[in-house]
Image (tube, rainbow over all chains, first blue to last red; front, side, top):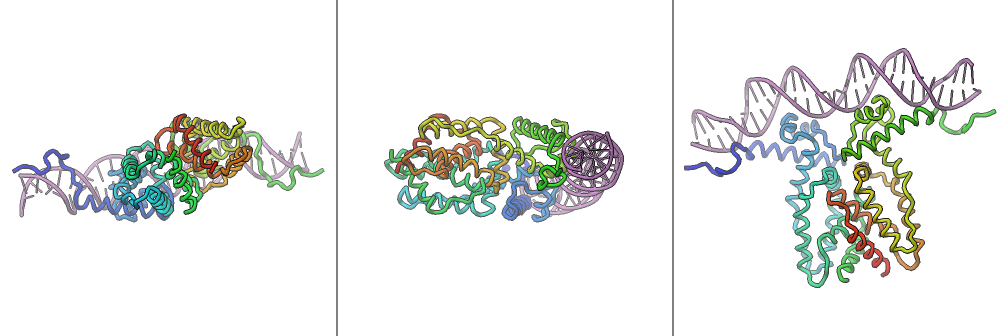
Length: 186
Length: 186
DNA sequence: GAACTAACGCAAGTATTTTTGCGTTAACCT
DNA sequence: AGGTTAACGCAAAAATACTTGCGTTAGTTC
């Protein structure tokens, strides 16, 4: 007989109460971020809403920033799949539309602010980039790379929202997609 | 004999000591932002560096956010003129290059973060938009508007920096300009 | 199911941030 | 020049944020 997961970190307890507390805290953070669109969630507020003692939160996350970033990263892990409509144009438009929609919800803006505030967390976005590249690779005959999608679609949508203009409206999104495709045709 | 500026707010004193304190505080904020690239400048630190008493700072600005935003807005007022190279392509490239350069300095990043954190301050960017439009109006035969410059140049540059990738390198900047012009030709 | 101990809750303590009351300085007006 | 008072500096108090010590709870292992 031998210890299960013998090489794993000794004495770590991710199950049961710990996981429950983690979920309760995350839920509270997301709710608070959605209500007051601020990136500075007060630990005391999170504790009150989640029912988890403030001391526990301080011990596990140290600072509000670390907590917010942890929540943001967890949100990225369970993201929805990339669109696959059969055409590059359709994929790009669906992608842009979904980004614009998700960023319009108040918690979407809070999430974006969190990522920006913790900038340097480049790793956080690496997986996303690979998925975009895979989408592009399905379509033949163009020179687009994931950076082009970033510059041509993500950047305009995100920055408009960050600057307090709303997200682009559907006609503008379509126009951005057309320009991106045209750039890839040359 | 009558009061000078009789219609102005009674009892406001912008001159002398008040202005001197304001300048000292602004200078301290800018320095601190440049050193530690954080958007949360501590009032106590600003007071220590500027020589202005903390109480005075609290009374005039209430919160660190308000102070940072005030500094950012003041910085925008004394901005450099738009480039005028003789060609649209030259103007756009010079503009993009200057933006990329200014945002690479640590205080430029701090400034950008401040604006983003205070999003909703759309007014702050209105004047800039008009200047961009004026630059476009000098060149004949294209359909570009200031929004196109925002989406095609500003957004990629700013968002790359905000996300922790560096600013685009010169070849990429040139490519973005070419795509923007191509989009305006159609 | 009993031993072991990571994670927790709680109360008290420490540190940091912000406010308040009051006397002083100096900008502005006549 | 002299009066008026906005803005200031200072010390003390209040509020807020964070840490620490300790006993308890409940995953985990055997």
